[in-house]
Length: 206
Length: 206
Image 1 (tube, one colour):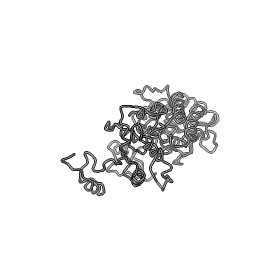
Image 2 (cartoon, each protein chain N blue to C red):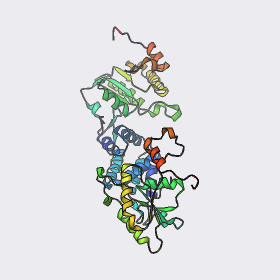
Image 3 (spheres, rainbow over the protein chains, first blue to last red):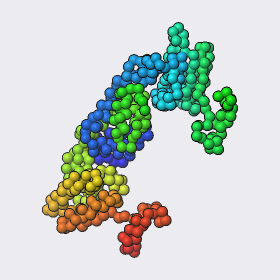
């Protein structure tokens, strides 16, 4: 594509660095901004830079927050003895949307992925261990729920965390894996179906 | 979606104003920027505002340009007697990509659309008439090619332009409409197929 303006070309290059946006979509977005009032572009640029420069992370659970402690960590309605370990902030939002969880969180900031050069020290794992250790006195953490993706990297991270938390005297659980609600048995992949038989739940006591 | 940060919420609101980007995608993009080095966000914001504030339009054909006249209008390799009338800048890029056209352009900036409140006076139609009138002396424009979309609005605009250019002593043509190259007759819609029979081309003289 031969864009007759260096300014637009620069904008297209920058926009197309975003995930899932190619050159063609980037050009469409740039031309859209050109058709709009300049205040819209100003507002967009300002919102992006302000967000990037001023956003904070909760010092306790590493969730996104506008304050030192996030609203979930601050809340005394949440059960502090339960910690749900997730990969990133979107997972917190997804779990919060279910309204089924009343404990607190710990955001790892990723999963162990040797291929992408992410080892345990890149993640907030030490901070989780410290958090559990420090909780002993006042309000001890009794259970750590590992809610990581059912991928190779997620499983590796769960396995690693399981080993690290072994002698910490906390219960470690992972979220259930099986056929999704509304899913038909016939169309479920073999691995999921196989696992869901092996990890079956006692129906009468459920 | 209950985002625990006002800063991110503002950014998501601004990003999701862009066409084709919903709240979920906007959040994904915002979180992507947060994971990257702040210089990327700065560069994106700067590129957008610079583009919006400094972009110029060619004073002759209204194409996007970094100078008073765009590179196509400046070029003496292009046939100045041919003008291709298009809706917007993306159409110029699309036609340039074909490498089949060596004339110049005229960008209308839209098509007549009463539903969206766009009348002929909102478009660069007067400037096209003036351009044809003024070309008489040195290098007269001999043909105006209407390359507008095959939609109701495009057809209305073509019809209006045809009427306005009637007594200007220039040939007015429109780009051919018919079955696309590689298209199968069986799957072509009735209107296109019907039209392509009515506007058939003499095969032996093609």
